[in-house]
Amino acid sequence: MLEVAALSVRYSGLTALDHVGLTVAPGELVVVVGANGAGKSTLFKAISGTVRPVAGRMSFDCRDLERTSPAQRARMGIAHVLEGRRVFTDMTVEENLAVGAMSRGRIADRLQEIYDLFPMLYEKRREHAGRLSGGQQQMLAIGRGLMSRPRLILLDEPSMGLAPAVVETIFQRIAEIHAAGTAALLVEQRADEALEIAERGYVLERGRVVLEGDGEALATDRRVQTAYLGG
Image 1 (cartoon, rainbow, N blue to C red):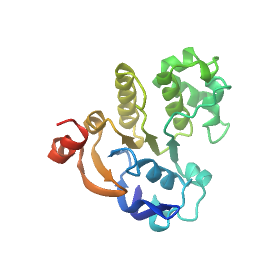
Image 2: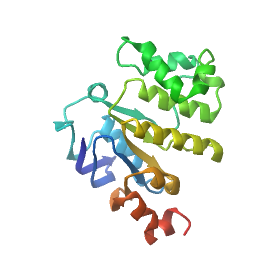
Image 3: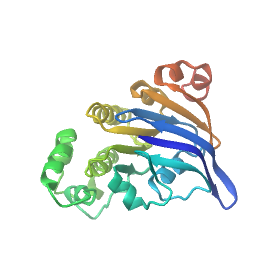
Image 4: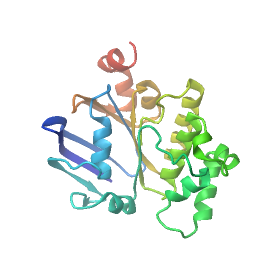
């Protein structure tokens, strides 16, 4: 469904991504792990269209993404949940969710789907997002991304800054989203939890893919264990 080939991105002459390639099949859960500064967020911004590559190609459902805007990519079925949650703090939970809908039709049905996935959001639906805890804001950010019913959701560091119990809940919900048929590309520093639920994974270092394979194989790879799993 998603194909990225030889993708390169530079900022002010510095290389952030260097000939990166990856694929995501329909309904697949793929994880990208790597240290801070490895280029993970840049990769997601390139896929969603907020950063322009200097080389390489990307396609979604065999459609070239090069000349498409972020809004067009969203309409094609790509949703991007940014690092750091980025909720609208002066809007209610339900207003935040409504922003994520690509159209006004049948919005009540989509809201109900999100409330079924995150019951806490239903309980807090009339509250301003700025009053939510960090974990609740992360659930809201994911829910907002799902409001367009994407075929592929990009999740950038959803566990960042959250307590372990909340992280466990977030990963359970990501697994449920995947089980329901939505493809997901997940960026995570918590490599152990991410690889446990992923079908395949890539290791990004200094803007380059240095390892790839199925989730179980990467989790047991000595290089991954040493660098990311404390082995």
